[in-house]
Amino acid sequence: MAAPKILMQDLCIDYVNEDRGVRHRAIESLTLEVYQNEFLCVVGPSGCGKSTLIAAIAGFLRPARGALLMDGRRITGPGADRGVVFQEYALLPWKTVIDNVALGLKLRGVAKAERHEIARRFLRLTNLSEAAGKYPHELSGGMKQRAAVARTLANQPQVMLMDEPFAAIDAQTRMTLQEELVRIWERSQITVLFVTHSVEEAVFLADRVAVLTAGPGRLKAVIDVEIPRSRRSWATLNGDAEYLGLRDHVLRLVRSDLEESR
Image 1 (cartoon, rainbow, N blue to C red):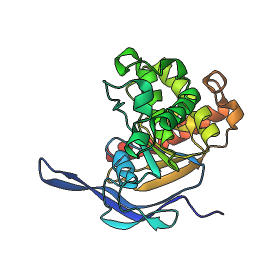
Image 2: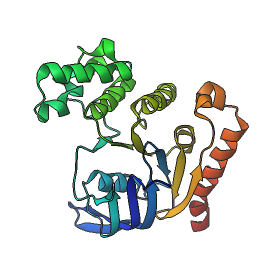
Image 3: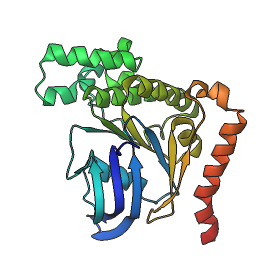
Image 4: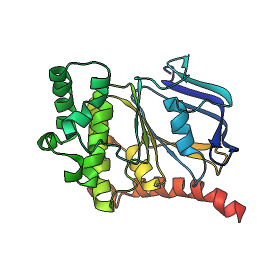
């Protein structure tokens, strides 16, 4: 088997609330691999450390213990090889969509003509070409999140980290974005680590689903999703027995900690 793109080995991460001066263990003794071009989803009960894990891989947090490696090298801080898509769109309201998408390229010193050419390519990929000259307030929530994805991809990271990016979007739009994300991932050949509260979303999107225990988060199980990509549309999967069985299995794993605590 190929070496993992990202390796977490006996990983422990603490969350610190600077305002209250409180530190607590968010991730405990986690060992998990993410492979090149894989789409891995992470699910678990609320408070299990999913977002903290994303922050550590992005380089925003230092692990308390253990190894956190990308391509065999220790992650010591943020880097252009990792892009993050948050739940909040974080688009600059005074810039057009194309300038928001090209923002990272501008900060890296790429000339305007070149960065706009790159931005247009990723606007086409995310079906936003017609919105290039609009401002964020003119976009729907779904379009804003697609712009955030386009901005991340325009920086050409090797890994895209997604922290519940569709959580605040209405159900119908969310389903459309999930289908579009699969299409974008297949075309861009990028490694994706996607955190979500939604078991349905995880099983729809993922090659594998990693289930964490209640906090501090430990690895409870890793489930292979062997449903062919050619069947990954909601019109196909809504009544699909294989999908429903996997969904229910993952949901039982997530809920078992809560039931045991009762």
